[in-house]
Amino acid sequence: MKSFKFRYSITVWVLLTTVLILSAVGVVWNIFNLIEYSWAGAIKIIPYALLIIMTTALFILVLSVMLYGRYVIKGCYIYTYFGLIKNKSKISDVLALTHFKKSDKLVMYFKDEKYTVIVIDPEEYEKFILSIREINRSVIYDAKTDGEDTPE
Image (cartoon, rainbow, N blue to C red; front, top):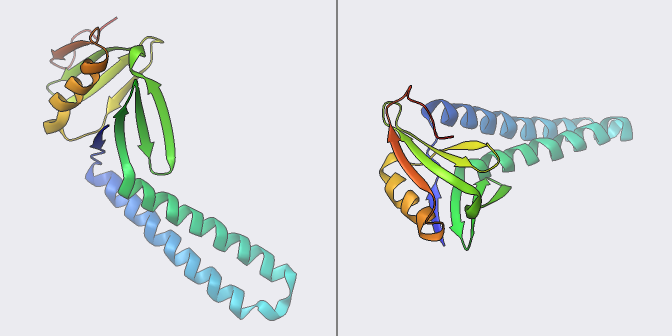
């Protein structure tokens, strides 16, 4: 099993941190309101309890994305963990990996004409490519300058 941690941009970190802080404030605010209006009965308690559950779930989801975003190559699959959300793709479905030099992006192309940008540290591109090609030797690797044609 090989793991490659996501490399988020500063903008993504700022947005994730903002959502994390706002969801934490939402949890605290709704707990305060739940306690403050607990005398009002179910009409006030149920909405605040639901809001506490939703803001807590959002907090946990964002925290998991911040701490556990990664690609894992295990067996014949590549798993993409976006926090608690997991996606699985067969490595045998990968046709090509292209490193666009100008933008310094690595793109993985699949048989079904889909593609994904691999969001890892550029220093790990070679290790990632070798890990994929270790399992599927038919994967084509190409380095291009942005603007050139992409693989068919």
